[in-house]
Length: 280
Image 1 (cartoon, rainbow, N blue to C red):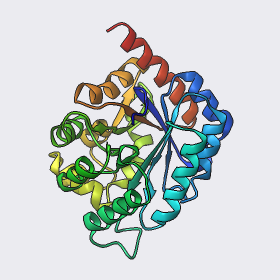
Image 2: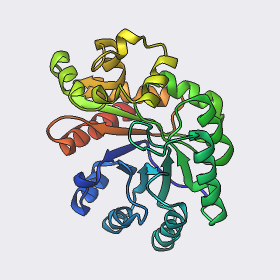
Image 3: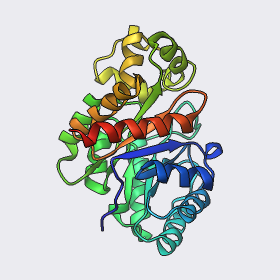
Image 4: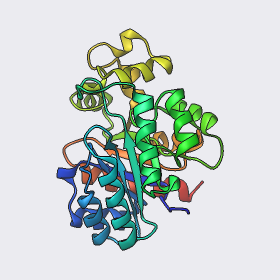
């Protein structure tokens, strides 16, 4: 059972998503529309986005195991699959200890959740997990179709591919901002994720594994770290930075747009990536 995700995905939060915007992103060439920030278990927004489009896949990035009951999510998956066969990918994740008071045993909790989905008839080929560290990546490899990580670099993508091997999905998300002035771009990045997310233990631990230091992680991040996590510059530079994930083994790259007009960022990025890929 395969699903066509395309090369590029657009990551948007619930308040940023409308049927009209979904249709616009389809016209811009995005293969997948990712719904961020713990969408509720009924997955109603995913269904509305699918209703408004004809070709793109829709994915969740990610359903949170602490806030969305697995049986409800499974029922929602089956409802959506019946209405829009082959176009929905269920991304699930463990959340963060800084947010959820009940947070404990992340690996075992996520494994139990995935097993509940499987028992409820959700195919493993339609589930991906937000895996960062090696143990979670092995869970993604062994129990699901792959991984949909965020706040990562192409080096993480390379390591994820080495662990997951061929035939599994590696679907990293990367922040993007079309801004040639590096100082302005870094200031924007520091006022939003990724700069504001560096105190989250899951992300910070993964960045340490990738070789970033305590000095890099201090405050809202060093220039070196921000530049690694945010593709900024002119459109062609941004496109090349995003495509570095493909070169490192990604099947697909999700774009987290930064700036005052996320839709404008997504349109420009899609056009630039298309221009780069059609001449190489």
